[in-house]
Length: 241
Image (cartoon, rainbow, N blue to C red; front, side):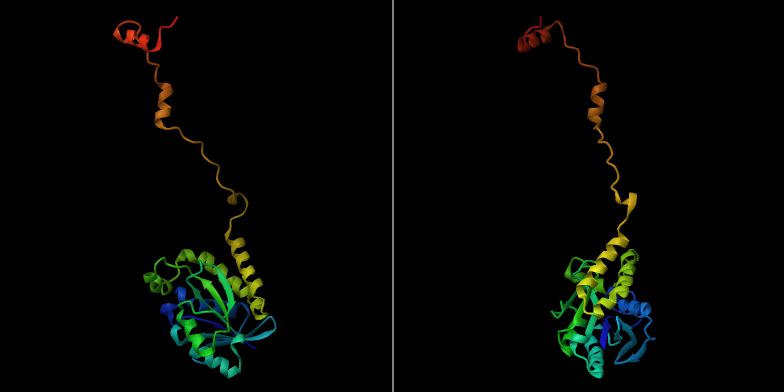
């Protein structure tokens, strides 16, 4: 048996936050693989199903993000599972939007949900980090993760969640590298234009400056043949035969 946890904050107010992409991944998996309806247990919502022949419990802690470890730890103890049976889906600001990386163990990276899990279950669980991008400065991080995904984000977010749901069986089998490769290729193939649209537009001919355009239209200046100016020119350049 395996426990797959998606992290987020409960309630409609937070439903579309970047911080809730873990909940979104859990919901996508439950829909795609016909898991049982969500029910309340372990201070969270759980759904049961199977992935790649393995029985899997999905859990969405309802303790708010900072106390996620309480809910997940309770579920692990009930099922007598160790950290190696746990996979956690969560948002990662240090990854570009749409990027996904999987690793076992490591630090929390400042993520309060992961910090809580580290405290309650240990660090040796699989972490599926889903990139939501960084706002650029530390002072904006809080508002960024608790802000909603923009409408323009749905183009890559929907593809990403669908692909996670499609290929999550690879995680159940422990094939983390294939899972990451499948997600990367799916995003590239579905979001990159193909055919004629893939070719750069032809370069426009380089326009001449207004100075260069005007020069050919100007009549050649007529040199004086007599007078002081003519004499000076002959002195400088010599007379012509």
